[in-house]
Structures are given as structure tokens and as C-alpha cells.
Length: 80
Image (cartoon, rainbow, N blue to C red; front, side):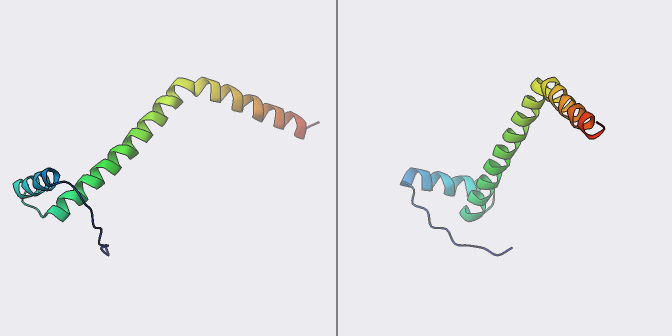
């Protein structure tokens, strides 16, 4: 995968924490930050999917009823 350079400015405490945590994990700061972003993006994606699934569980009967009625109406019109 091609790499793109991204320059970020952070305060010294944040930079120090990033260096320390990357070193503790045996990786570069670049790799550490890349992993954090991937994890965050994955969590956001999971949160969206979980919320969508929860919404569908809550309103499944409403959608089923609405779409069943819509299909029934369309079928009646086609045979009339």
C-alpha cells in the first residue's frame, strides 16, 4: 500500500506519550499512530453497524408491516 506523509502538531506531553507507548509496544511512532487511527475507524464502523442493527431490531415489525402493505397494494394494482 502506498504511504502518504501526514504532518501533525501536538504538545510535548502528547508527543512524549506517543513515543513512550510506541516504544513499549515495540513499534515506531508512525506505526503506533497508524494503528490508533485504524482502531478508531474500526470502532466507529462497529458502533454504526451495532446502532443500525439495534434500530432494525426495534423497528423490524414496523418495516415488515409497511413493506408488506406496499407490496400488497402493488400486486393488487397489477392484476386489476
